[in-house]
Length: 149
Image 1 (cartoon, one colour):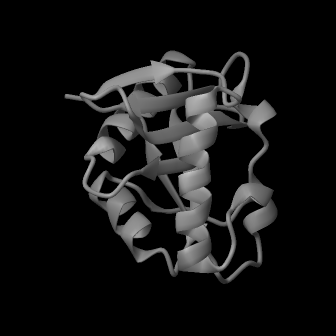
Image 2: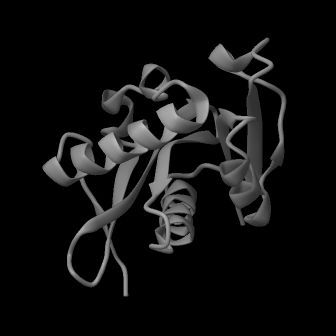
């Protein structure tokens, strides 16, 4: 049984899970991904940071959402500890929150080499969108998006 909580990205549990994410990304891509994310973007209206807790009340996953442009929100800092099953739950909560904020689409960028993440998003209905922002011209990145119900 997982419990989801909206927290500040500076929360101690958030910092621990993001450190796991950074280590996992560094092992896969050679970079932590931290340079493309500002915790301040996950605070305030139209944004959030979500943690997933397991039955032992240990934080096992996270994800964030921020405003991108118009009716588009952007997913950031998605992570689920392997075997926890937290990823789908965090994603569903971020999508629910995005819709409640008035977003009609969610976009994200991940590294092509992170095939596990790409496959996860594709399984959940995300498809390629044109590169945006800092990802324009970066062949290592793949940008994905999904219309919200």
